[in-house]
Each structure stands twice: as structure tokens, then as C-alpha cells.
Length: 283
Ligand code: PAF
Image 1 (spheres, helix red, strand yellow):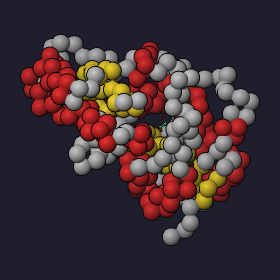
Image 2 (cartoon, protein in one colour; image 1 turned 135 degrees about the vertical axis):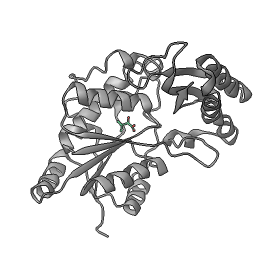
Image 3 (cartoon, helix red, strand yellow; image 1 turned 45 degrees about the horizontal axis):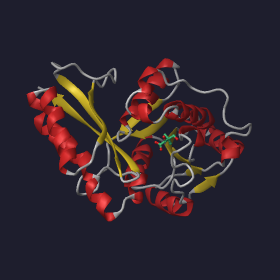
């Protein structure tokens, strides 16, 4: 197996990719902030199936963290990440410094994520999605991938990335990869490592609320919300939001809605903010 290459600069990455493209290779990008888990590795496996060259970016993007969020303590584990990426056949790890990505200081030009970005995650994390789309857009310009892989776990992020690609006619495909879960249902997340043993049990409130929502889906929205809320109550966890949205618009569905919908949940468990989501069919 060819050894993975760690690339810290934009110039070097562009040169390597230009060589591969001249040889006719297609390129997939998996954007990450590192602290990789099985969910990320699944994105890389999918990228491996879709393109000849797989680039994984590892960059904890300061632009998408608020002043009181966990940017400083966000887990950084480059050596372990690279070792994990070797096992799934990534080719290049783009691991720039903050100064490499933002040589003139924080970007003055930003992608405005629009009204959906003010809802749900955005309501608790003002500016988060503008910062996320700005770095994703920079990564798309740096790597110029044919396809980029994102996890369904961050459903609002995926919606906004797909919307940016359509709105700005960006020339790439977006591949959405299903959420990877622990055996007991907890969605994998880099932030799970913050949880104490007790919080790890309480964190099941999120996935259990989604299962309860699914079980109640044939009975309509009110029942879905009541059952999902009860699952939070059983763990003594207060949801930050629990909402059922239309997958096409990402706006809350009406009381009489039927058909495909997405349940979004978020909660703080101890000091750790967790999110999860699931598709349901409202009856
Ligand atoms: O999902 C993430 O890890 C980040 O939001 C992303 C897409 C890598 C942008 O920083």
C-alpha cells in the first residue's frame, strides 16, 4: 500500500493534485476537523469507491467556533488520525495551520449561509454556519474535487453545503454518507470523548428520542414530538431543540404533514453539546 502523504501547504497540495489530474485521475475530498472516528473512516471508504485520489483535510477551523465554544480544547490528534487514515486508503492528508488557511487573519470575505443557518444549530451558535461554509468553500477551491463526502450526522450542515453548491454553481458532487453509531445507538462524534461515564449514558437520550419518533411516525407530528420528548425526559436531559423538518426546505413541517421528514435533536449533556437526526415517514 502506498504511504499516505501529509501536506501542510496549499501550494504543495495544488502541485500534487495537478500531477494526478494530468494523469486522468478523479479527486474526492473528505473535509474533517480531525479527532477521527469510525464515522469519518466511513466517509473515506466511500470516497475511495468514488474517486482515484482521496484527499482528507484536517483543520480545526476557528471561523466556525463562537468565543465561548471549544476551539481551544477541541481534540487534536494528528498522528492517530494519520494512522487511522492509512488503514482506509486515503492518499493525501491536507493539514494546514491556521496561518496557512488565513494568512491575512480571519477572512473578511465570508459565505453568508442564509436564513436556514439562523435556525436550530445556528440559533445557539451564531455565525457557525457562515464560518463552516467559508472554510468548506476555501477547501473546494484549493482541492477542486470532483466529489466531496459529508456525514448525514450533521444534517443541517449537509443541507447548507448542498444549497451552497447549487446556489453558487460549484462544479462538484456532494455525497452524503449515513451516520455511524455505537452499538447502543449513540451517533459517533469527536465530542463524545468529552463525556464522563454517567454522561455517556445520558447521551443516549438523543438516539432514543429518534427511535421513539420513528415508532410514533405513523400517528403524526404531535405524537412524534410527544414520544421523542418523553425519551429525553427519561434521561433527565433537556433538548436544546427537537424539531421535525421538511428535507427539501429544512423548515419545520406543519401539524398535518405526511411523508418524508427529518427529526433534528440537540442537547447539552454535561458541558458537551451533541446533535443527531433521523429520517422518518409521517403517516
Ligand atoms: O463537519 C466538520 O467537521 C466541519 O464542519 C467541516 C465540514 C470539516 C468544516 O470545518
